[in-house]
Image 1 (spheres, helix red, strand yellow):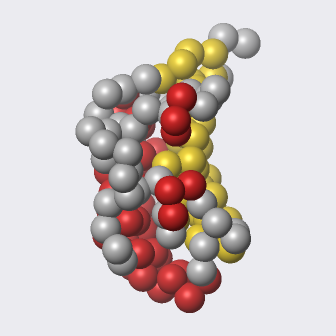
Image 2 (image 1 turned 60 degrees about the vertical axis):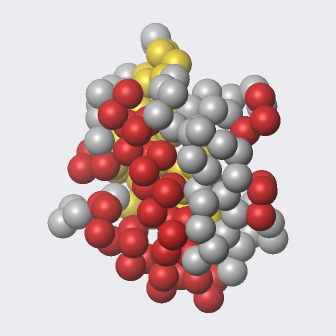
Image 3 (image 1 turned 180 degrees about the vertical axis):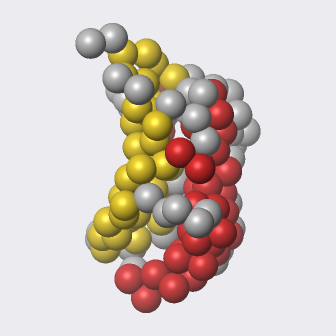
Length: 128
């Protein structure tokens, strides 16, 4: 099995030089590492609200999927990490706008904390 590392400057680099890739393409799938609400040009969280942060997360996911030859319309599975499940409705409102008429399978998990004080992180698997 061949695997290809995906790297684009239009999405944030791996967090503080950590040893992971933005995404890996293997066997017709792209596996996108968890994305926070970071812009590629600086290392600070964008936005105070869950909606603002979720919008930036989807911008990052889109940039990485584009670089891998995929797109949000080809998502098959996502995992959403929230630091507070009371943010679910706000996240879900933005999420629904980005995943379209055939949303992927999804799990949503509450966690005690995320890097940089983020409220949301989303990882994804999509078709290439």
